[in-house]
Length: 292
Length: 150
Image (cartoon, rainbow over all chains, first blue to last red; front, side, top):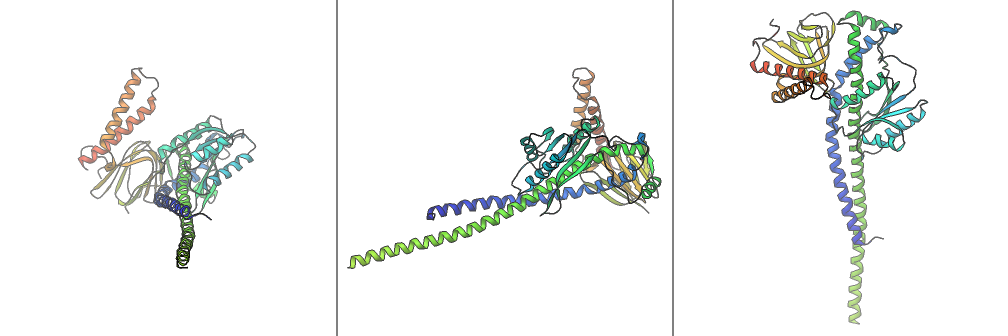
Protein backbone atom coordinates (compact mmCIF):
# COMPACT_ATOMS: atom_id res chain seq x y z
CA UNK A 1 0.00 0.00 0.00
CA UNK A 2 1.63 3.25 -1.12
CA UNK A 3 1.70 6.12 1.31
CA UNK A 4 -0.53 9.13 0.91
CA UNK A 5 2.36 11.26 -0.23
CA UNK A 6 3.38 8.72 -2.86
CA UNK A 7 -0.20 8.58 -4.13
CA UNK A 8 -0.38 12.33 -4.39
CA UNK A 9 2.84 12.46 -6.35
CA UNK A 10 1.67 9.77 -8.77
CA UNK A 11 -1.61 11.57 -9.39
CA UNK A 12 0.33 14.69 -10.22
CA UNK A 13 2.62 12.89 -12.62
CA UNK A 14 -0.20 11.06 -14.38
CA UNK A 15 -2.06 14.35 -14.79
CA UNK A 16 1.02 15.93 -16.32
CA UNK A 17 1.35 13.06 -18.76
CA UNK A 18 -2.31 13.46 -19.67
CA UNK A 19 -1.73 17.14 -20.39
CA UNK A 20 1.09 16.32 -22.77
CA UNK A 21 -0.73 13.54 -24.58
CA UNK A 22 -3.81 15.73 -24.86
CA UNK A 23 -1.75 18.52 -26.42
CA UNK A 24 -0.16 16.07 -28.86
CA UNK A 25 -3.59 14.75 -29.72
CA UNK A 26 -4.87 18.22 -30.59
CA UNK A 27 -1.79 19.04 -32.66
CA UNK A 28 -2.00 15.74 -34.52
CA UNK A 29 -5.70 16.29 -35.19
CA UNK A 30 -5.13 19.62 -36.87
CA UNK A 31 -2.11 18.38 -38.79
CA UNK A 32 -4.06 15.35 -39.87
CA UNK A 33 -6.71 17.49 -41.46
CA UNK A 34 -4.11 19.36 -43.46
CA UNK A 35 -2.24 16.20 -44.44
CA UNK A 36 -5.47 14.61 -45.67
CA UNK A 37 -6.34 17.76 -47.55
CA UNK A 38 -3.01 17.67 -49.35
CA UNK A 39 -3.54 14.05 -50.29
CA UNK A 40 -6.94 15.03 -51.71
CA UNK A 41 -5.44 17.93 -53.66
CA UNK A 42 -3.04 15.66 -55.51
CA UNK A 43 -5.76 13.24 -56.55
CA UNK A 44 -7.06 14.92 -59.75
CA UNK A 45 -3.54 15.07 -61.18
CA UNK A 46 -2.89 11.45 -60.29
CA UNK A 47 -6.17 10.23 -61.74
CA UNK A 48 -5.75 12.07 -65.01
CA UNK A 49 -2.23 10.71 -65.36
CA UNK A 50 -3.51 7.20 -64.78
CA UNK A 51 -6.20 7.51 -67.43
CA UNK A 52 -3.79 8.87 -70.02
CA UNK A 53 -1.22 6.21 -69.21
CA UNK A 54 -3.80 3.43 -69.46
CA UNK A 55 -4.77 4.72 -72.89
CA UNK A 56 -1.21 5.06 -74.15
CA UNK A 57 0.78 2.25 -72.61
CA UNK A 58 -1.08 -0.59 -74.30
CA UNK A 59 0.46 0.59 -77.52
CA UNK A 60 3.70 -1.13 -78.43
CA UNK A 61 2.72 -4.53 -77.12
CA UNK A 62 4.29 -7.10 -79.41
CA UNK A 63 6.51 -4.35 -80.72
CA UNK A 64 9.50 -4.48 -78.37
CA UNK A 65 11.34 -1.68 -80.14
CA UNK A 66 8.67 0.85 -79.33
CA UNK A 67 8.34 0.01 -75.65
CA UNK A 68 9.85 2.30 -73.10
CA UNK A 69 12.47 0.83 -70.71
CA UNK A 70 10.39 1.81 -67.70
CA UNK A 71 7.65 -0.50 -68.98
CA UNK A 72 9.80 -3.51 -69.89
CA UNK A 73 10.07 -6.34 -67.44
CA UNK A 74 13.56 -7.85 -67.50
CA UNK A 75 15.12 -10.83 -65.71
CA UNK A 76 15.27 -9.94 -62.04
CA UNK A 77 18.72 -10.08 -60.45
CA UNK A 78 18.33 -7.37 -57.84
CA UNK A 79 15.24 -6.12 -56.07
CA UNK A 80 14.79 -2.81 -54.32
CA UNK A 81 12.18 -1.84 -51.78
CA UNK A 82 11.33 1.81 -51.31
CA UNK A 83 10.27 1.78 -47.69
CA UNK A 84 8.36 4.84 -46.55
CA UNK A 85 7.72 5.46 -42.85
CA UNK A 86 7.27 8.40 -40.49
CA UNK A 87 10.24 10.01 -38.78
CA UNK A 88 8.76 9.90 -35.32
CA UNK A 89 7.02 7.49 -33.01
CA UNK A 90 4.21 7.94 -30.49
CA UNK A 91 1.77 6.68 -33.06
CA UNK A 92 0.68 3.32 -31.70
CA UNK A 93 1.47 0.27 -33.76
CA UNK A 94 1.87 2.11 -37.06
CA UNK A 95 5.64 1.92 -37.36
CA UNK A 96 5.99 -1.66 -36.20
CA UNK A 97 3.20 -2.73 -38.53
CA UNK A 98 4.77 -1.24 -41.67
CA UNK A 99 8.21 -2.42 -40.66
CA UNK A 100 6.98 -5.93 -40.04
CA UNK A 101 5.14 -6.03 -43.34
CA UNK A 102 8.22 -4.79 -45.24
CA UNK A 103 10.52 -7.10 -43.28
CA UNK A 104 8.43 -10.16 -44.13
CA UNK A 105 8.27 -9.11 -47.74
CA UNK A 106 12.04 -8.68 -47.95
CA UNK A 107 12.60 -12.07 -46.32
CA UNK A 108 10.38 -13.72 -48.93
CA UNK A 109 12.39 -12.48 -51.91
CA UNK A 110 14.75 -14.90 -53.64
CA UNK A 111 16.96 -12.19 -55.09
CA UNK A 112 19.22 -9.86 -53.09
CA UNK A 113 17.19 -6.93 -51.77
CA UNK A 114 18.37 -3.35 -51.30
CA UNK A 115 16.37 -0.80 -49.40
CA UNK A 116 15.75 2.86 -50.08
CA UNK A 117 14.49 4.26 -46.80
CA UNK A 118 12.32 7.33 -46.43
CA UNK A 119 11.77 8.21 -42.78
CA UNK A 120 13.85 7.43 -39.72
CA UNK A 121 11.73 4.63 -38.32
CA UNK A 122 12.04 2.47 -41.41
CA UNK A 123 15.70 3.29 -41.86
CA UNK A 124 16.51 2.29 -38.28
CA UNK A 125 14.58 -0.93 -38.72
CA UNK A 126 16.55 -2.02 -41.78
CA UNK A 127 19.87 -0.83 -40.35
CA UNK A 128 19.23 -3.07 -37.34
CA UNK A 129 18.40 -5.93 -39.70
CA UNK A 130 21.70 -5.32 -41.57
CA UNK A 131 19.86 -4.93 -44.86
CA UNK A 132 21.71 -3.18 -47.65
CA UNK A 133 20.66 0.48 -47.90
CA UNK A 134 21.00 2.32 -51.20
CA UNK A 135 19.90 5.67 -49.86
CA UNK A 136 18.01 7.25 -47.00
CA UNK A 137 15.84 10.33 -46.83
CA UNK A 138 14.76 11.70 -43.48
CA UNK A 139 13.23 14.89 -42.10
CA UNK A 140 10.75 15.38 -44.91
CA UNK A 141 8.58 17.24 -42.45
CA UNK A 142 4.87 17.12 -41.72
CA UNK A 143 3.84 18.30 -45.16
CA UNK A 144 6.33 16.95 -47.68
CA UNK A 145 6.44 18.79 -51.01
CA UNK A 146 7.08 17.44 -54.44
CA UNK A 147 10.51 19.07 -54.44
CA UNK A 148 11.53 16.88 -51.55
CA UNK A 149 10.29 13.64 -53.03
CA UNK A 150 11.90 14.46 -56.38
CA UNK A 151 15.30 13.28 -55.09
CA UNK A 152 13.78 9.96 -54.10
CA UNK A 153 12.23 9.51 -57.55
CA UNK A 154 15.47 10.38 -59.26
CA UNK A 155 17.43 7.72 -57.38
CA UNK A 156 14.78 5.11 -58.07
CA UNK A 157 14.57 5.90 -61.78
CA UNK A 158 18.35 6.26 -62.26
CA UNK A 159 19.21 3.00 -60.50
CA UNK A 160 16.53 1.23 -62.49
CA UNK A 161 17.67 2.68 -65.80
CA UNK A 162 21.36 1.85 -65.26
CA UNK A 163 20.51 -1.70 -64.29
CA UNK A 164 21.54 -1.66 -60.62
CA UNK A 165 18.05 -2.81 -59.73
CA UNK A 166 15.61 -4.71 -61.90
CA UNK A 167 12.42 -4.44 -59.92
CA UNK A 168 11.24 -1.87 -57.40
CA UNK A 169 8.50 -2.14 -54.83
CA UNK A 170 7.13 0.59 -52.64
CA UNK A 171 6.05 -0.10 -49.08
CA UNK A 172 4.08 2.44 -47.07
CA UNK A 173 1.16 2.76 -44.64
CA UNK A 174 -1.89 3.44 -46.81
CA UNK A 175 -4.34 5.84 -45.24
CA UNK A 176 -7.72 4.09 -45.26
CA UNK A 177 -9.42 6.08 -42.54
CA UNK A 178 -8.56 7.83 -39.31
CA UNK A 179 -8.79 4.52 -37.51
CA UNK A 180 -7.26 2.26 -40.17
CA UNK A 181 -3.85 2.51 -41.85
CA UNK A 182 -3.00 -0.51 -43.94
CA UNK A 183 0.63 -1.47 -44.60
CA UNK A 184 0.76 -1.73 -48.40
CA UNK A 185 3.34 -3.06 -50.83
CA UNK A 186 3.06 -2.29 -54.52
CA UNK A 187 5.22 -2.78 -57.55
CA UNK A 188 6.62 0.52 -58.76
CA UNK A 189 8.97 -0.55 -61.58
CA UNK A 190 8.66 -1.84 -64.20
CA UNK A 191 5.44 0.10 -64.52
CA UNK A 192 2.36 -2.04 -64.76
CA UNK A 193 0.06 0.33 -66.59
CA UNK A 194 -3.41 0.69 -65.17
CA UNK A 195 -5.80 -1.26 -67.36
CA UNK A 196 -8.51 0.22 -69.50
CA UNK A 197 -11.82 -1.61 -69.41
CA UNK A 198 -10.93 -3.28 -72.68
CA UNK A 199 -8.33 -3.16 -75.42
CA UNK A 200 -10.97 -1.57 -77.63
CA UNK A 201 -11.40 1.28 -75.20
CA UNK A 202 -7.65 1.86 -75.27
CA UNK A 203 -7.37 1.91 -79.02
CA UNK A 204 -10.44 4.12 -79.23
CA UNK A 205 -8.79 6.44 -76.77
CA UNK A 206 -5.74 6.70 -78.97
CA UNK A 207 -7.71 7.32 -82.13
CA UNK A 208 -9.88 10.00 -80.59
CA UNK A 209 -6.98 12.25 -79.71
CA UNK A 210 -4.53 14.28 -81.68
CA UNK A 211 -1.17 13.74 -80.00
CA UNK A 212 1.48 16.39 -80.21
CA UNK A 213 4.30 15.83 -80.96
CA UNK A 214 3.44 12.07 -81.05
CA UNK A 215 1.96 9.43 -78.75
CA UNK A 216 5.47 8.07 -78.15
CA UNK A 217 6.86 11.40 -76.98
CA UNK A 218 3.86 12.02 -74.74
CA UNK A 219 4.31 8.56 -73.23
CA UNK A 220 8.02 9.08 -72.74
CA UNK A 221 7.38 12.31 -70.85
CA UNK A 222 4.54 10.73 -68.93
CA UNK A 223 6.26 7.67 -67.48
CA UNK A 224 8.80 9.42 -65.21
CA UNK A 225 5.99 11.73 -64.03
CA UNK A 226 3.93 8.69 -63.21
CA UNK A 227 6.69 7.28 -61.00
CA UNK A 228 7.24 10.65 -59.33
CA UNK A 229 3.54 10.99 -58.71
CA UNK A 230 3.24 7.52 -57.21
CA UNK A 231 6.13 8.15 -54.84
CA UNK A 232 4.76 11.56 -53.91
CA UNK A 233 1.34 10.04 -53.26
CA UNK A 234 2.83 7.30 -51.07
CA UNK A 235 4.71 9.92 -49.05
CA UNK A 236 1.53 11.94 -48.59
CA UNK A 237 -0.36 8.83 -47.52
CA UNK A 238 2.36 8.11 -44.99
CA UNK A 239 2.13 11.63 -43.59
CA UNK A 240 -1.65 11.42 -43.27
CA UNK A 241 -1.40 7.94 -41.72
CA UNK A 242 1.15 9.11 -39.21
CA UNK A 243 -0.89 12.09 -38.02
CA UNK A 244 -4.09 10.09 -37.66
CA UNK A 245 -2.34 7.17 -35.96
CA UNK A 246 -0.71 9.61 -33.57
CA UNK A 247 -4.00 11.33 -32.88
CA UNK A 248 -5.71 8.03 -32.07
CA UNK A 249 -2.79 6.78 -29.98
CA UNK A 250 -2.66 10.03 -28.00
CA UNK A 251 -6.41 10.03 -27.49
CA UNK A 252 -6.16 6.52 -26.03
CA UNK A 253 -3.26 7.60 -23.86
CA UNK A 254 -5.20 10.61 -22.55
CA UNK A 255 -8.29 8.49 -21.83
CA UNK A 256 -6.14 5.94 -20.10
CA UNK A 257 -4.41 8.57 -18.00
CA UNK A 258 -7.79 9.93 -16.94
CA UNK A 259 -8.90 6.45 -15.85
CA UNK A 260 -5.74 6.01 -13.83
CA UNK A 261 -6.17 9.44 -12.25
CA UNK A 262 -9.70 8.52 -11.22
CA UNK A 263 -8.60 5.24 -9.64
CA UNK A 264 -5.64 6.81 -7.89
CA UNK A 265 -7.79 9.65 -6.57
CA UNK A 266 -10.19 7.10 -5.13
CA UNK A 267 -7.37 5.21 -3.44
CA UNK A 268 -5.92 8.50 -2.25
CA UNK A 269 -9.22 9.63 -0.71
CA UNK A 270 -9.70 6.27 0.96
CA UNK A 271 -6.22 6.40 2.44
CA UNK A 272 -6.72 9.97 3.58
CA UNK A 273 -10.05 9.15 5.22
CA UNK A 274 -8.50 6.15 6.93
CA UNK A 275 -5.73 8.30 8.29
CA UNK A 276 -8.17 10.90 9.61
CA UNK A 277 -10.22 8.18 11.28
CA UNK A 278 -7.06 6.79 12.82
CA UNK A 279 -6.03 10.22 14.09
CA UNK A 280 -9.51 10.80 15.52
CA UNK A 281 -9.40 7.46 17.27
CA UNK A 282 -6.01 8.41 18.70
CA UNK A 283 -7.33 11.72 19.99
CA UNK A 284 -10.51 10.19 21.39
CA UNK A 285 -8.49 7.36 22.91
CA UNK A 286 -6.00 9.86 24.38
CA UNK A 287 -8.79 12.01 25.86
CA UNK A 288 -10.48 8.94 27.36
CA UNK A 289 -7.17 7.87 28.91
CA UNK A 290 -6.77 11.31 30.53
CA UNK A 291 -10.27 11.25 31.97
CA UNK A 292 -9.64 7.92 33.62
CA UNK B 1 -20.19 26.58 -75.59
CA UNK B 2 -17.31 28.18 -73.72
CA UNK B 3 -14.37 26.26 -72.31
CA UNK B 4 -13.89 24.83 -68.85
CA UNK B 5 -10.30 25.13 -67.76
CA UNK B 6 -8.66 23.17 -65.00
CA UNK B 7 -5.04 23.73 -64.01
CA UNK B 8 -3.67 21.07 -61.68
CA UNK B 9 -0.25 20.12 -60.42
CA UNK B 10 0.75 17.10 -58.37
CA UNK B 11 0.52 19.27 -55.27
CA UNK B 12 -2.69 21.17 -55.72
CA UNK B 13 -5.62 22.16 -57.84
CA UNK B 14 -4.48 25.59 -58.89
CA UNK B 15 -7.54 26.88 -60.71
CA UNK B 16 -10.85 25.71 -62.09
CA UNK B 17 -12.59 28.19 -64.32
CA UNK B 18 -15.71 27.99 -66.43
CA UNK B 19 -16.90 30.06 -69.33
CA UNK B 20 -13.45 30.69 -70.78
CA UNK B 21 -13.39 32.15 -74.30
CA UNK B 22 -9.83 31.43 -75.33
CA UNK B 23 -6.74 29.82 -73.87
CA UNK B 24 -3.16 30.20 -75.05
CA UNK B 25 -0.67 27.56 -73.97
CA UNK B 26 3.05 26.99 -74.53
CA UNK B 27 2.82 23.71 -76.46
CA UNK B 28 6.08 21.90 -77.11
CA UNK B 29 5.49 22.36 -80.86
CA UNK B 30 4.94 26.08 -80.41
CA UNK B 31 2.34 28.27 -78.80
CA UNK B 32 -1.20 27.23 -79.45
CA UNK B 33 -4.56 28.81 -78.81
CA UNK B 34 -7.54 26.73 -77.86
CA UNK B 35 -11.00 27.95 -78.77
CA UNK B 36 -14.31 26.27 -78.05
CA UNK B 37 -15.08 23.18 -80.20
CA UNK B 38 -11.41 22.27 -80.45
CA UNK B 39 -10.70 18.68 -81.49
CA UNK B 40 -9.58 16.25 -78.79
CA UNK B 41 -5.93 16.93 -78.18
CA UNK B 42 -3.19 15.66 -75.94
CA UNK B 43 0.06 17.58 -76.03
CA UNK B 44 3.18 18.09 -74.00
CA UNK B 45 3.86 21.60 -72.75
CA UNK B 46 7.04 23.60 -72.64
CA UNK B 47 7.92 26.04 -69.93
CA UNK B 48 6.21 29.32 -70.60
CA UNK B 49 3.28 31.54 -70.19
CA UNK B 50 -0.24 30.27 -70.14
CA UNK B 51 -3.18 32.61 -70.28
CA UNK B 52 -6.90 32.43 -70.73
CA UNK B 53 -9.52 35.07 -71.21
CA UNK B 54 -13.09 35.22 -70.08
CA UNK B 55 -14.85 38.30 -71.34
CA UNK B 56 -12.61 41.17 -70.29
CA UNK B 57 -10.84 39.18 -67.58
CA UNK B 58 -7.47 37.75 -68.37
CA UNK B 59 -5.64 35.26 -66.16
CA UNK B 60 -1.97 34.53 -66.62
CA UNK B 61 0.11 31.66 -65.26
CA UNK B 62 3.72 30.62 -65.38
CA UNK B 63 3.95 26.89 -66.09
CA UNK B 64 6.99 24.62 -66.21
CA UNK B 65 6.46 21.62 -68.45
CA UNK B 66 3.60 19.19 -68.28
CA UNK B 67 0.67 18.08 -70.40
CA UNK B 68 -2.52 19.54 -71.73
CA UNK B 69 -5.62 17.62 -72.62
CA UNK B 70 -8.53 19.07 -74.54
CA UNK B 71 -11.69 17.01 -74.67
CA UNK B 72 -15.27 18.16 -75.23
CA UNK B 73 -14.48 21.79 -74.39
CA UNK B 74 -12.74 20.75 -71.21
CA UNK B 75 -9.12 21.79 -70.97
CA UNK B 76 -7.05 20.02 -68.34
CA UNK B 77 -3.54 21.23 -67.74
CA UNK B 78 -1.28 18.85 -65.84
CA UNK B 79 1.65 21.10 -65.07
CA UNK B 80 4.90 20.01 -63.46
CA UNK B 81 4.88 23.36 -61.73
CA UNK B 82 2.43 26.22 -62.09
CA UNK B 83 1.93 29.58 -60.49
CA UNK B 84 -0.72 32.22 -60.99
CA UNK B 85 0.68 35.63 -61.96
CA UNK B 86 -0.61 37.25 -58.77
CA UNK B 87 1.22 34.64 -56.67
CA UNK B 88 4.63 35.35 -58.12
CA UNK B 89 7.04 37.14 -55.84
CA UNK B 90 8.92 39.45 -58.19
CA UNK B 91 11.79 40.02 -55.78
CA UNK B 92 12.35 36.30 -55.41
CA UNK B 93 12.15 35.67 -59.15
CA UNK B 94 14.63 38.52 -59.69
CA UNK B 95 16.99 37.00 -57.13
CA UNK B 96 16.68 33.59 -58.78
CA UNK B 97 17.49 35.12 -62.14
CA UNK B 98 20.57 36.88 -60.76
CA UNK B 99 21.74 33.68 -59.12
CA UNK B 100 21.30 31.62 -62.28
CA UNK B 101 23.07 34.22 -64.40
CA UNK B 102 25.94 34.34 -61.94
CA UNK B 103 26.31 30.57 -62.05
CA UNK B 104 26.25 30.51 -65.82
CA UNK B 105 28.89 33.24 -66.02
CA UNK B 106 31.15 31.42 -63.61
CA UNK B 107 30.69 28.28 -65.67
CA UNK B 108 31.58 30.08 -68.89
CA UNK B 109 34.68 31.66 -67.32
CA UNK B 110 35.80 28.13 -66.48
CA UNK B 111 36.12 29.26 -62.91
CA UNK B 112 33.91 26.52 -61.58
CA UNK B 113 33.52 23.27 -63.47
CA UNK B 114 31.29 21.77 -60.80
CA UNK B 115 28.37 23.90 -61.82
CA UNK B 116 25.59 22.05 -63.56
CA UNK B 117 25.16 24.31 -66.56
CA UNK B 118 21.97 22.65 -67.75
CA UNK B 119 20.34 23.13 -64.38
CA UNK B 120 21.43 26.73 -64.17
CA UNK B 121 20.12 27.40 -67.66
CA UNK B 122 16.80 25.80 -66.77
CA UNK B 123 16.61 27.88 -63.59
CA UNK B 124 17.35 31.01 -65.58
CA UNK B 125 14.63 30.22 -68.08
CA UNK B 126 12.15 29.54 -65.30
CA UNK B 127 12.90 32.80 -63.54
CA UNK B 128 12.62 34.75 -66.80
CA UNK B 129 9.20 33.26 -67.49
CA UNK B 130 8.02 34.08 -63.99
CA UNK B 131 9.27 37.63 -64.32
CA UNK B 132 7.60 38.09 -67.67
CA UNK B 133 4.30 36.70 -66.40
CA UNK B 134 4.40 38.80 -63.26
CA UNK B 135 5.28 42.07 -64.97
CA UNK B 136 2.77 41.54 -67.77
CA UNK B 137 0.08 41.40 -65.15
CA UNK B 138 1.18 44.68 -63.57
CA UNK B 139 0.74 46.38 -66.92
CA UNK B 140 -2.68 44.84 -67.24
CA UNK B 141 -4.42 43.11 -70.10
CA UNK B 142 -4.31 44.59 -73.57
CA UNK B 143 -0.77 45.82 -73.05
CA UNK B 144 1.66 45.54 -75.95
CA UNK B 145 2.72 41.99 -76.46
CA UNK B 146 -0.43 40.47 -75.03
CA UNK B 147 -0.98 37.45 -77.20
CA UNK B 148 -4.14 36.01 -78.66
CA UNK B 149 -6.44 39.00 -78.97
CA UNK B 150 -9.75 37.52 -80.08
